[in-house]
Image 1 (cartoon, rainbow, N blue to C red):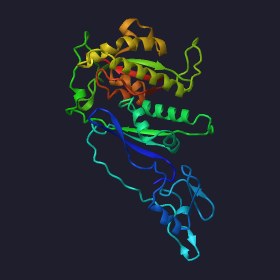
Image 2: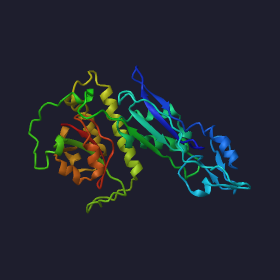
Image 3: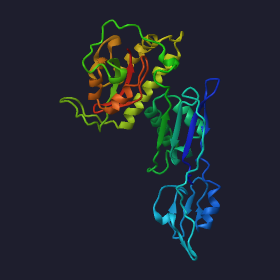
Image 4: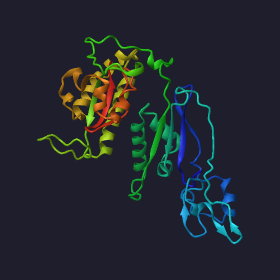
Length: 336
């Protein structure tokens, strides 16, 4: 229940295959139902549309009319004793019956600076470019909002959070039906390969690694110091995701299974790996460029939780979200 323009938007798939926006409130600026209570409690609404504030009788100002907050805002004293609270913690509740990940693929929560720059449909269109890749989607949303605020105050902060709804594991989701053809070589399994409960065992991966100046792993002796920021590194990987998806869309015959997806993206993945990646695997030739080989659960753990949680959910052929390790940022594709 914000007086600002923070926004919540649900992405809803239409029959034509387009993702439309289903706004859940916040962007309208204020809750009309709150106004009588605020006036009775001695508060005032000040400012112009898009920059409204709640003013306390003492002169202090707040961006919100409902929130968990301090007692200063919740027990305002008046001539006849305590008045109604200016800020309440009672939420404004809306409900939407979800139809599964095919009907509602994601939910976006964005801060006021983002909602002021991008409308609900624009938010959904941008996020839709990065399917089940919330870090990449939020990075692109924030970047476009910053560009829209170009020339404004330098302290503009753009915040976005995406929640992706996934199909149930083991369900009848169409994405999980195709199985890759058997690999030429058997994966090297270890005692760590059999995950409890039948989880993912060894997987074959290829990746693009982009380093940035704040990574915890220092550069090796003789290597140049990395000067790019994390935001710049993420932008490079978002471009790679878009180019790989574009190539896949332009394939004359749509891939029937995961093996065909991997084959269709191999050439462009190798080109992008040689251009962008700062890993030893980028020096491999041909389709082996970027190949990490068969990676066990223990080996995935060694990259850190930020890497493992992104990679473990991949199905064969799928591109990962941007994954974080102490080496830098990774774009990973599961190839088997």
